[in-house]
Image (cartoon, rainbow, N blue to C red; front, side, top):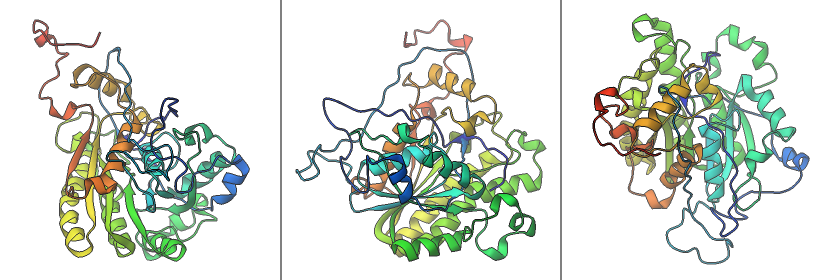
Length: 388
């Protein structure tokens, strides 16, 4: 993808949370391990692509409570699971757009892994060395901890740049760029072929990436190239990935992307064509749900997530204001966690959501439902409940 940062609701720090009274998620499933850092690293094979869909909102310090909800499962996978658990044992998930441990892509990977899925990821080529180095040095070990104390294991990391469909699409200046040196087979078609050779098939595809080189510019000041670049990296990349992956996805599989309320509401500061890209992504979700559903029995949904603190989102410059605005105005006055978005993705990927497709699922504490900002002085005399 391009080097410019984009606003993203795709990233946020994940704090490991281990319940002592009961285990949450799946214990000892798929390919989790508590082995040493070096042993864990040896299982990771080199290869990767970008993670970065950015997100935003406004400011004024506000108190809030952090509430985390989790998908439930059994302490012992050999015992019958109670209730309606999110059970993804035996499933394989490819998450496109994991470049660090504080984004939505990472959170979704953790939730899918906790539910039993095998995890493989795609990382943006220029970010590959740093990502793998951080994994190797154990920098992400704390973030890899699952609720039962085991570590999330990534079976394989692939290099990826979803802006290019095939080698013929890659311009010479990118081919010769030193940040791409040493990596190969990172275009979409080559990536899918590599996954097919290595694993045969997948069950879950997650699109957790975006880029808008002119995101800080108002739409009226956005160039044609900047606008088209945002659409290409943030919207068409999903179409391209699903187009290629659908041939190796098992029937009953699921595909999930990440969108943002700027697709349907005005969010000043979220520019450069990114709001248009998210609107296109949501429209494509509906059309792809029909086509992939009829032809391949694959479900296609997108999650509209609220603002989260992340390295990518901070690139816009006002993510803290956006979070404060949400805290003041959303029906639920708490800061959204990446884990909550990850859990929603795990649900959508599971058999529990077998009849849900073509949907935009809001995971934003209800902010999307608001028509006004209740923190406005206009409403000062109204008796509006507030979290003190």
